[in-house]
Image 1: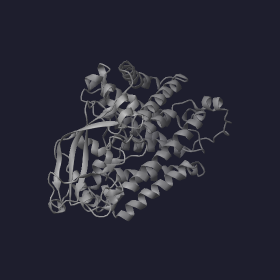
Image 2: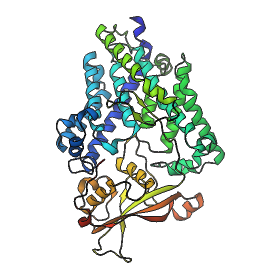
Image 3: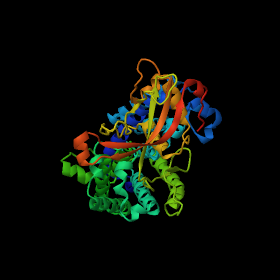
Image 4: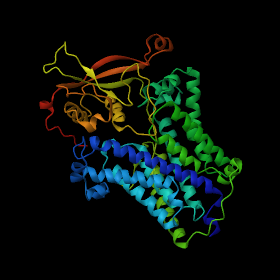
Length: 483
């Protein structure tokens, strides 16, 4: 069927699939590096405890069949290796069916991780990566031209990501409607980046322009993705530029990068190749009948499952970052329906004093990404995902004890647990564990230009209250956290 493929989008598919596979590499490596402390057999939220109470039908995962830390590491590093092979072109060097198997294995392995990851994997970009991975599977490889239907499904996914985010803002916090949200956002976002201080100090009129431009990029431009070329390519370009602005201003794991990857699939590859002076590839053979049938069946499935996210877009009670099925096939997306005006941070400290009192010396644990030492410039980690740091931001928004997994964290710090300490930037007790740990809540504000010059501090902070009172190993013995 001539209408089935779009040979001019060969470059679009190449960029989409290779870049998407690179993000899978990052996701698997992040899982491999962090799982032991978070969800390992002796972690804060152990997978075996989760699978014992949650059946397979509610969380499909290989780890319902078997779990050990060694097996999880094999899955994570194996997924990273397979993804790296796809980045290197392995999926284009094998028959079409084998390429699809490679993508299917990548997707199934990461689905297995996400579905037992519990609160540590409760982010919208996990579902987005899984949904995009399935689209990568059905886009085929160099043995055939890209299927038109799947290219449209990629645009439909990008539309839901952007339009859903735009609607949740307009329905949410008033500051999005009066264009003042960015007076606060660069300072109070979950994990500021090295340029966030500078973005925060832009003139307020420019912040209003930023907000208005964001509304245009998320509420108007996504509709243009469904128009003929070159308008669709221009729309995709605007999405890419907008997302690069977000990359520069903060750390949102792979959310922005994945949105950029999705946008590339809407670019007219033939025109882009001509502009770049790339030679055109040889004509692709006709798509096999079995492949056409599989793509048609998948398209029908996505169309049926799209009912729920489409209804969600027009609902007054719009859900943000929600999966309507356990396979994360067609999801609802959105971000920052409300904006935090004040930045709170939980600062975790320990002391060697066996009987802490007013004169005890408390030393602060430093995290890799979240603000701590006021003199430390925030670092850029995205697209890598620091899960503990992100959850610490949510903990700061909660009331006392609202995040009981902090007790599990405290218990591991009291034991100088090696896997937990790997998630931190600095352990103030390298030789022997502390006798007590505690957590205090601080308010953080960016310093002004003059204060930065005089003190070298990027932040000023003021204590608010005690978050977790001093606890020792005896108090926390047998602590368990049920998600």
